[in-house]
Amino acid sequence: MKDILFDFIAKYITLTEEEKEAILALDLFRSVKKGTILLKEGQYSKESFFVLKGCLRVYYLIDGEEKTTAFYTEMDALTPHCVIQDAASEYFVSCVEDSIITVSNTDMEAEINTKFPKFELMCRKLSEQLLARHQIDFDEFKTSSPEQRYQNLLIKRPDLIQRVPQHQLASYLGIQPQSLSRLRARMLEKKS
Amino acid sequence: MKDILFDFIAKYITLTEEEKEAILALDLFRSVKKGTILLKEGQYSKESFFVLKGCLRVYYLIDGEEKTTAFYTEMDALTPHCVIQDAASEYFVSCVEDSIITVSNTDMEAEINTKFPKFELMCRKLSEQLLARHQIDFDEFKTSSPEQRYQNLLIKRPDLIQRVPQHQLASYLGIQPQSLSRLRARMLEKKS
DNA sequence: ATGATACGTTCACTTAGGTTAAGAAATGAG
DNA sequence: CTCATTTCTTAACCTAAGTGAACGTATCAT
Image (cartoon, rainbow over all chains, first blue to last red):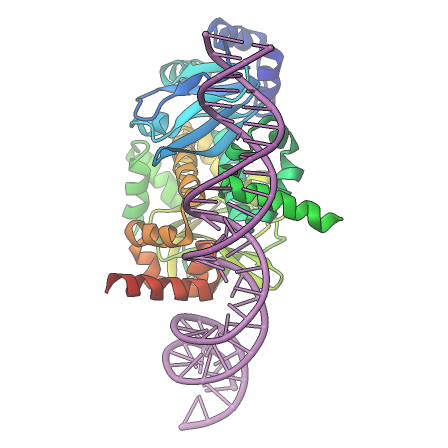
């Protein structure tokens, strides 16, 4: 399982055995049950997550409705907004499936970053890449219709459609669950 | 003008005079005329921008139509996707108004970052913050209607509505120019 | 100054997503 | 296994965005 973490890190920097040991010594790995809430709205958390196996979900509670805006699966890293801004969280993070993740906090990261400056570089590269990818995703979202977004999702993250409930996918696509149902029916219609 | 740059940097790290000199020695400042295209689709560019005064715009050319997805104004930093991925650019960057910006390239940044490791830290903090802010923006976009997005823009970036053409604002809001016109008329109607 | 082009608005019409409600299917707890 | 709850689908109706076209008005180049 730890190999997944090191494979991920290897995309950005090269670690020595000593550095790997230092990371393992932090004892970051956690097993979390489906439905577990890792971060609540209003909480002041310092914890970041990395998904080794499973799926995390970010959602807002707006007028009593859950609005899902993001999914994190294998090899995805999530540092919530409240951790960066040192503010109360605007959203929830919960566990879609039984998952294995790492949980780290800001203090630990700062310590590692000063001990191994190489990590600072990794964090920068990682944030830069995530930001760039994210911007492209946002641009795609803006420039396409709900149906195109769904088609796009079928291609880019087909696994999500299998493992995540429809109504959560719907708000991820920016529409109502009923609209997603109809949209899917319409697409089947067209094909035949 | 250089004060704007140093004020911006001061939000993340504290610079010595020596470091400030080193930055000024790079001769990054540029004056660019309205309409200038700083990055073209298909180009392999290594240049990042920082806006001291004026406004830059990111747009895609889709079926011969310009689709604007982002605006960068005073104190905004833009590192295009193609710079991070070392790939052909998917979009254009152009100048909405006569502007004063800094233009830096990856090599220069790498040099500075090794000479002054402090910069590495700044870049990480900056990317992290931008990423976090960006995610919140994306979430807001997903969970709101075109009208709400426009209302939101009125509050958050009222200047944009003044300085940017309507049809560019429209695609920034994910709608057609005619729809923005109608939506505005509808809102005026409601008030009275 | 003038003609061309680009921009913003309006209108009529089409299309697709929002809303409300009902019922079927799947899931989970006891 | 059974009941309760959640999830998914369908349908009818409403509303708002997309589309195509027309028209007036800026804006720009010559």
